[in-house]
Length: 460
Image (cartoon, rainbow, N blue to C red; front, side, top):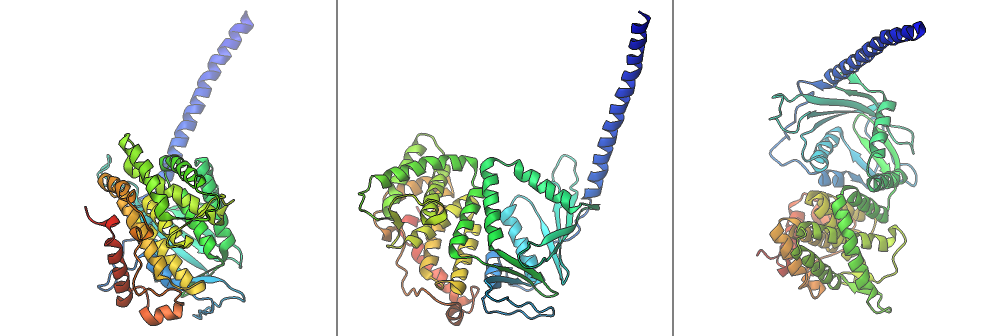
């Protein structure tokens, strides 16, 4: 009896101690989080947005990267001399100013809802990068203030074949050890939906296989890589899969089945089918679902994504389906240009589609079959097709109605007059100087006029 009373008294004495311990730990955790937040968040931005020099508009990301794409036999010899190694592949060569312009041009594409400003400093031992962004996307938040998240880190180049490393990472006044940052990134990736994580890892694998070296000196950063056109198409496909919404991805399965059923019904001896024959039944299926209450913009985007998936798979990205080739003007690559550009523009926006298409043409001009105005025309058709498909509910319904009326390839793409394909980089520069020249812009405007004149794209 006495023993039980003693145990009860001891428990009563212990319980307040445990409660006090938990209270102290909770206060300590809250205090630590508050201190970390104070160290990470600052009242003012560490950098301000810089105004472009001169009266000309700043170059877009596609123009910057295209102009920086170095030819195989180029040599860069600033102080610190960077030369391509034997059997080198392709290179992108950027000054600190170009790196900063490319960095700031990429933010509206990747995070359009957030205002981010970046600054770049280049030295022989590292690439210093600073980023500044408001904590709240809107200024009229509940607190009435908008503190800033200022991030600074340095990228160090590594020996050939090794990815550059990030060190000296700071968020506000708080230094972050590199292993902690890497762990946090992998935790974020591991928490993603399986499809998105799988796509991100596939994209990482493609980039790893293409990467060769990243070299720095006081005047240039030189990214050297080995990639072929098929690998570029794979990267483009991975990007589509990465940014497509779960709703579009799920809906695309329906259009994939419609496409496979149509192809399976063709005569076995038929080795190729025109894109102008494939699109109308898909558009009819989209129109039927829209009439039943589905969102026409969602249906059109899923249609284009499913068709892009089929074209990528049939071109060797994975086990190719046993079905006829889909061609445009008897060329499989033109059909791929139209649909891939349309899918990217519908999913991720016109600007990104233009960057990718421009980059591919620059790659072809320097390293492959040469610059092609036919390919450029197909890319422009794809982008116009996407704009019609998703710009508004009215245009989405117009897309479904008009595409059902396509009968021949000429209804989908003009036969551009005076086109000359296969221009080498030197021939292109001799004719057009570069992609910002008046002559080149006039040629592109002429192509746009011919595309816009098609009944498919006529203003209602």
